[in-house]
Image: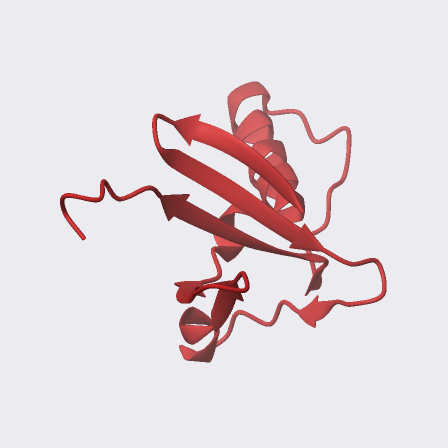
Length: 98
């Protein structure tokens, strides 16, 4: 698991396992409702996977943006066909709001 703070109190969590992959078939609406429970021994919460921030998807998106900026088609990056990590964006909620 990796954890990166992207803004004060907002984190990207990436869970990965080289033995597990998930098909990245983003057709229809079923892919929008992938929920997972992240827990420790005391409590768990349900989170939605954030496929748009998957590292492979980010690489593809950055390639497309660079291609648009420069007009260069030198390197080829393919759209991912599977996800090798589960990415979540989690925002800390102050205790007074809970």
